[in-house]
Image (cartoon, rainbow over all chains, first blue to last red; front, side, top):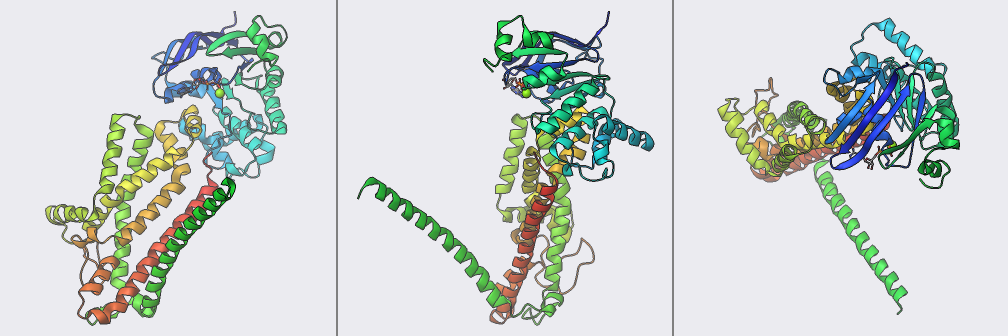
Length: 252
Length: 288
Ligand SMILES: Nc1ncnc2c1ncn2[C@@H]1O[C@H](COP(=O)(O)OP(=O)(O)O)[C@@H](O)[C@H]1O
Ligand SMILES: [Mg+2]
């Protein structure tokens, strides 16, 4: 039996009194891409951020149920959050490079985790930039500020930054929604490549994108996971009426 | 007259009145500035800026007062800046919203509402007498530091608040601790605004008279300080002295205007610098 890489079991989440996730059961296998779709405010980002415990940064969040990676509860007492975050990389909606050089942006995750070996860091930076399909564009200006890059390049830099610490899982929250079509296409190609090595959860508003990049698709509505199945099935013959309506654009 | 014409007329009148008010404010400002320049420019010379006062402060220069004010600005900000920035970081990054934070904000607001002469009194009693520092740069600087601390705390807090959360999330998402996140990501992004606040505090410090009155400012001391435990002359107090109690007030009047001009010039330069910094540094780090 192949163990589920990422899993949620009867997961509930509240922001104060607001009930944002209502008993989610969800699982995906290693090296697959799951797309999370649904109307704004239905809890996609919240769900994504459960898996690197990003919601810990917000006051008054309470969680019930289990979130598991490789079968282990990531909210268990024995788990250290920074260890978890080394295994789970995140890419955000808007490119958000740090006010540092291109090189230092990618090296950041290594440095904050105590890695000092210079040649190792250089190797990781180059490798990550290559994986993010950015190396050729920036190899001659690694010491330039990251803000000098275009939006699409910045987003690929943020992907490289996440890859540098060699995570196993990538969480992407609408990573292409702020980009032009060409940059978006590049990011989509990239996701396809990255799938060989990583397990990916991607939130997207774009139905075509979901169907192009993902193996499975999960439809969220008002804090509930309505349906999670093979992408093809979700887009052609979903089990639930709500899903059908959403993917055909009848609401959302 | 129909409704539309009345409406248009009212619009024109309101607009005219507003324009009149804003022009008159600018006019008053220029009048004051011009008045000081016209009365002071004749005495401002190289000698005026580089010489000691002479002849009961009716002649000579104001070098010790310029140096004194610069010393006070530098030392008081060296004290207030780190404390203020760390407090601001603590308030914005480390403590959650709640009664404690509200209480601290209330206190810093109160602190900035206290008349500056009260700080002078406190400084005299505490730094000068109790700690035995005497009238000195260090006593005056600590007093001034307390005065500008609320401003620096506030600007730091506001600058950090303006830094988008996504930077914090990205950094901690890579395993950075809170301090690593704050120090190497959030603080550099907020820095242009914090520095602007710093410079505006410097210009505030340069003009304050009451806090230095009993803690550092010398009536007449034609020499430069050797250490932070020395007394100094300072521009705003020197201005007060030559304007009200010199040996010969009419004869020293131009010196008073010259001193005012130098003081205004320092403030102006600092404000321009603050503006420039905000623009230049601000364009390098975008806030998102
Ligand atoms: N920090 C927060 N505090 C309170 N409510 C929040 C917070 N973040 C999100 N929410 C609420 O939770 C719901 C789900 O939000 P989110 O997960 O961001 O939705 P999505 O990503 O699907 O658009 C929304 O109704 C939103 O208003
Ligand atoms: Mg979202």
